[in-house]
Length: 180
Image (tube, rainbow, N blue to C red; front, side, top):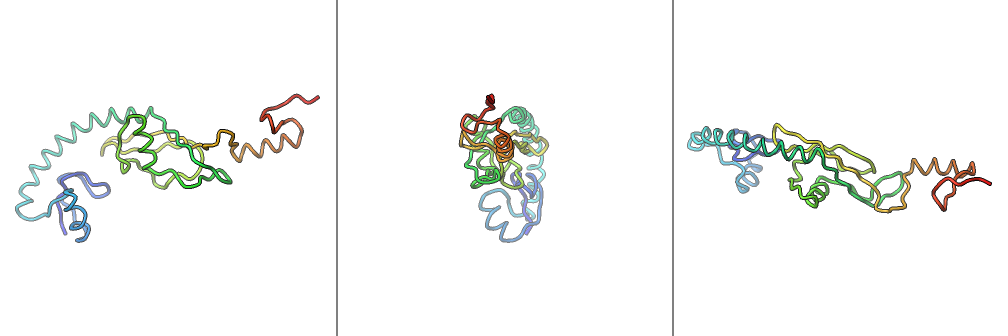
């Protein structure tokens, strides 16, 4: 089935493009969501007008996207999760979680624009690409940390254990103590 896209559709095309899709995808998703119209002789005549309108809209959107990208490049999202053995999270951090945290900071962005290949499943600092516009990509800093304020990462536990064995580390105080 051939359809003409009315809006940009992720991983399919941009507004005004004529694309070939599976019949079910076109009939059950694109057409009911009004993301596309069926590509027939009458609609193909309208395509040029849509492309001109889409180009104008894209230029206006690009300026706004660059401003949003600048905000995202400076923003930092901190997400706290429960942590198990070897610094692995119980659950994971998804693009929806990141979008919700950005919303709390007053930055509204669709979760589908956050290009997270796989959910984040470990502690650490990540730089996540955000596709703000087809020509503008921002890089958002995401910090995943434990929700337990007393949590010690596993690589630090090993150092602490070695120091404890040598007698220079006080486990109760979590700091080096003077040996008498």
